[in-house]
Length: 215
Image 1 (cartoon, helix red, strand yellow):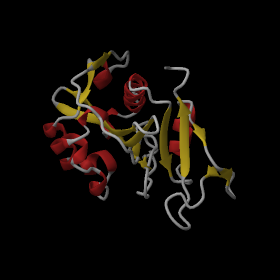
Image 2: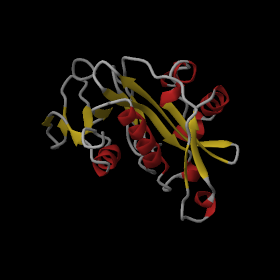
Image 3: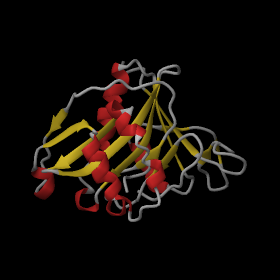
Image 4: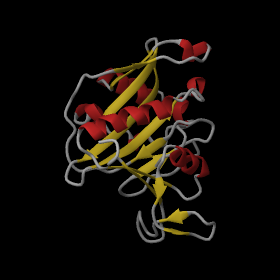
């Protein structure tokens, strides 16, 4: 599920899941993906004009086993609880680390994104994104999204996808600000949904963003 990273919580659903806590533009997503991600050690550096923790140089790197261990040991800090432990499958670091990224402040992981690429459909999915409370409101979730988007385009992906719960207004606003469109028909609250997306009676907001123009 998706939303501003630790943005209002979503719960897991079959296929793609996204989670956010509305206190920040960092999202937690969970997306299914076929295909494989090849390992790469590429990094992206960026500077922030903010003061405090944001003033330090940030580097986005592939998630290592050490990073993964730190993340799963710190879920309560990232998410406010550890109930999403099952969503943090070790395959993200052991098999798909080229689609998993972290941002560190000094030696501490302060934000991360786990994603998939479905080569057969030329689609990239965001699985989970989260930011520590101490580093929210600094645009780190957006930075991770941008990095993953660049990687997706380099692999000839035509779409970027993610999902969230219909109640997750923070996630919906965040994705719309990134240029995502919502699939499906409006529900009673006027939110476009795909009915029964995650099973009978379990509707989801499905985000889609075309990458054709970026390719």
